[in-house]
View (tube, rainbow, N blue to C red):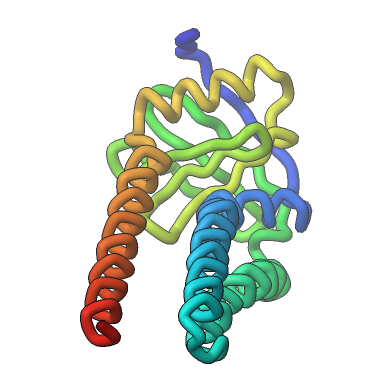
Amino acid sequence: MTTERPIPFEGALTYKQFRAGQRLHGGSQLALLGIFCFLAVVFVVSAIFAVVEGEPIWRPLGLLAFAAVFLLLIGLQEWSIRRAWKTHKLAHDRIRGVLDETSLSVEGEVGSARIPWDRLHQWQASSKVLLIYQSNNALHILPRELFGSDEDWAAAQELASRKLPSRRKARRKLLLWTFLIWLMIFVVVLLLWSAYTA
């Protein structure tokens, strides 16, 4: 579906919508949970080897402590989102705007902006929120509720997908490379440890 008509939006963000946007921007917690599960499996395997070989069980406990750090990161992410909501006063204001073939236009209580698509950076969306980026960390959060109809919501996502590169595709590549690098580090450390204890 391609539309050339202006797509209006209007409303004020709630904390729930702001949180959904920030969580989408920050990346899924599933990535952190996946890393935690991977480290938990490594810990269990290391503990089994320690017991079988008659070594002290405390040796693999460092891996468990390392995995616990990732659970702490999840809690810190939620804390930082709540703090950002409390301190970002402009996010509480009512806004109105229009998406069209040339630009994103936004008007709030303290000012307005009309930003051409070629000055914007990326986009990504979930079923609840559309994010339009000015840079890696400067973004506009446009929840589904700001749009007057399902047709407008779908048209806004379609327009953003035509005008801007997808942040999600770039993030997938980054996550894949990050996982491969950590996997290589783990294999190298395991080989060095095996050689040292042999």
